[in-house]
Amino acid sequence: MSFLLGFAGWSFISNALFGYTYDAVTDENAKLTDLKENVSIVVSSFNEPPEMEAACLDSILNQNIVKAHPEKFDIVLTKLVGKLTARDVGIRQSKGSLILNCDADSLYFPNWANMMLDPFKDIGVVATNAGTFYKNYFTDVLGAIPINTSVQFRIYGRNSAFRKSTYFAMGGFNIKVDQTDLVEMIDEEEIIFRRRMEKMGKIAYVNAPCLHQVGLDLGRSWNKHHFWEVLGREYWHDLAKIEVPRFS
Image (cartoon, rainbow, N blue to C red; front, side, top):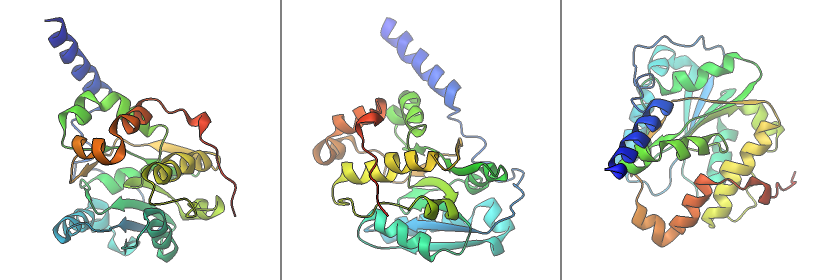
């Protein structure tokens, strides 16, 4: 009985704190932000099935703010080996002054772009960041507290935005890291990059999760990515042990 009560209590608190009904991000008729700048949506795609990539692009084209102001948006699709390299090339090819970052294995709810761009009305905001919905009860409800806490310490490639000028001012991604090493690549993409971005201005958390089309495969995570190590890094961010490199 105590286990069931604890389980129910954790689920309730998790939902209450992080709003896992996601009413706002799914609201196609939400009031649109007063968008002053042009926006490039950079989508990284590598080895995703064609139907998955098409579904992602379709969800982006069906954003309420994109449909209302198509002249302000362009989409850059990159298909290169090395995620950091692909994202860096996409940003350099972009036309907009604001960059929205997506992955081809994810879907984006109709009000997502609108919510991610709204904080940039504050000139002190250099980036926005949001989490991911995995279609998995453990991660989406029971894991909401640690995973959403994790968002406060990272900036996700599949669900973030930043000013292009800030990206270049801080030196962009360090593409010299070993991008075949998952841990080293994620450290650079999500943690070290955020720490350098924080020195440039404010990073706003937005409750606008995307939907990962694959879901979280715990078995694959265990076999290939040392699941418990990765899970531990989600819960406890020992950032002091990660040295921020200096590079031009």
